[in-house]
Image (cartoon, rainbow, N blue to C red):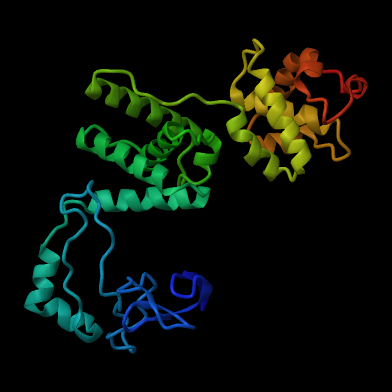
Length: 312
């Protein structure tokens, strides 16, 4: 039971939900507060033979506008789980003959979904990656190319366009064997193909160092105060003319902040967490070091403590 305002009792009272009628009823005066409600919970009832492997679900998945039939195709189930009898029957032969034109698309969408799930990405990024792959696949220009790299590149582009960028290394970690170089080439190929098709430049979104800070800091086990200091310092670095990649700047700022704390992180650990080479972090830190007093927020350390930073 839960509480809900009852206009008859003129106060919040406990209500009872009648599942058979779909009514929400006040437990004190019996007034029906809501009628014919839709039960959105799972349907646990099943009519399948429990000894078989048949799927008891009686409804399909959501429609998919990227598929020819909207994802609403019909599949003839096996009678009583008899595989051999089913394949030899007329229905089984017709089922096998009916080729699905979207089979390759479905497999590609499934691979993209698996990669996105492993990275903890939201459904909007998955859908955008599916749209990008469908556009490229319709151009018939990806035959003979590394399929895993193409799918990973679609996911990378989708993250950029949805303002939730991931590094190529992060995408590579779930790309089923595709290397960073292959994903990079596939990304350039896809962008070029779609720009030719659209007749205009493709919007990729701008990468900012602050986009990566939270994930990198969490991976290194940094506390909230240090994380806030890194975020503030990274934002301030955008006002400077530091010609380094956003990821390199984020890694260098993290190194700078951790050197001022009791929990100092070695450059090797930061390199592993960020995917930036130690030499690149060292050079970026060298560029940022002269501006340390402007970058590091005063709530984190005092100005005289900043002078104790390691000399690059």
